[in-house]
Length: 279
Image (tube, rainbow, N blue to C red; front, side, top):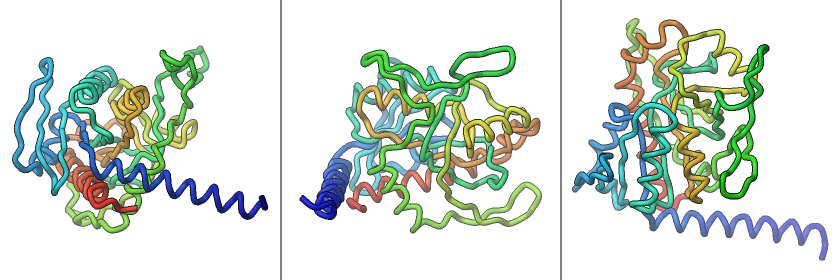
């Protein structure tokens, strides 16, 4: 067999796997998770919805277009997010889980209202803490014993759908608190997760240097880890509220509604692309 023939077969196999994955996406339930206040725009979009209580956690089942969607409300932080993700997967068996919410900007080019699609995620507060700083590493899979990478990549078929849907979406312009009108952008990036609401510009810059992070939040990588453990495709979508600096909490409160809506628009667009079998 020639090298060209082998390459052609490899490409054909990759395309076939993408088609099979996308067909599975197009016929299955989609789970969407988020902090209660930030996931509300997705809940409002659901048609014919009903509430289901699973061990005290609120889920709402309905449709977006022709797709059945289950929305789960998470508390803040990695443990809360992992719990609700586990309940979602165990009770509703989704093939895809999306996390929709807000984040602080680590990349200096990002502004409030911009949306980051998590091409990779990392838990920035996991590793070995030494006097001169933290030595970060991935977590060990408790079942297989293998070590996850520090930067966990999004599943390529799902990321491909997100990329194509984002190209066709234009987020609405809005006025900032200073009165400036701006048109938000949608980008891919590395999303860092940790159990702190970051309001420290120094730590923000260290995360940019160490991880190449674009945004920081408190749940996404934990949901990704949970989904990987149960073999479910997962993608994190975050819209910027603040700069993760000393004004972070004030700016979060000012922009949480707008950012949550922008994250919801991107999430809904991805779900529609899954529904249509878009490649």
